[in-house]
Image: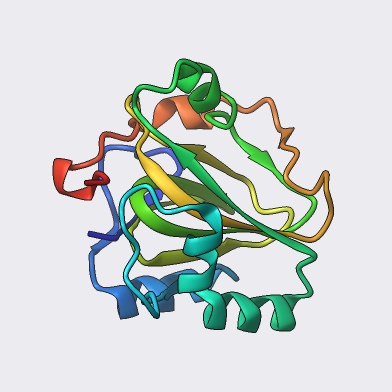
Amino acid sequence: MSRLRIFAENAPDTPQFDSRDGAQIAAELQKIGVVFERWQAAQPIEPGATPEQVLQAYRTDIDRLVAERGFKSVDVVSIAPDNPKRDEMRAKFLDEHFHKEDEVRFFVAGSGLFTLHVDDKVYEIECVKDDLIAVPDGALHWFDMGAEPHFVAIRFFTEPDGWVGHFTGSDIAQKFPRYEPETSDKVA
């Protein structure tokens, strides 16, 4: 289940806000320029579906988002716990960074944790199946897929190098707990 927790940047153990309600999550994130939506597939997606089948199942929402935001490419990424590069992939974005374009992800299955650092607050957003998050370009954040990553996500891009992380050198991400997904959030 999706979850938003908001902390003071110097109090990683005490959330000031905690909700699993999609409408409340969207309203709180909208205040900082982050889009949060929930999508439903137009057709069932079977385990092992091809990227083309995944994209087709969400074609209406994908086309709407591409038209609204001018994305030039869309792809599907899938990470499983048995991936031999999972530790390297996880470590890649665990430190605070930003991108030079919006980071837009839709979770077809599984889950991941986006954590944003805005002013003196930290917004921890657990995204699960059917969640779309759009983090604005320049927003300071980090992403944790967990020690045993298990997700399928649709990614949206404007430029080929827009997803490159620009790291701040801050150690704030190490002060907050790492992601440990609930077993119900894992891909079947």
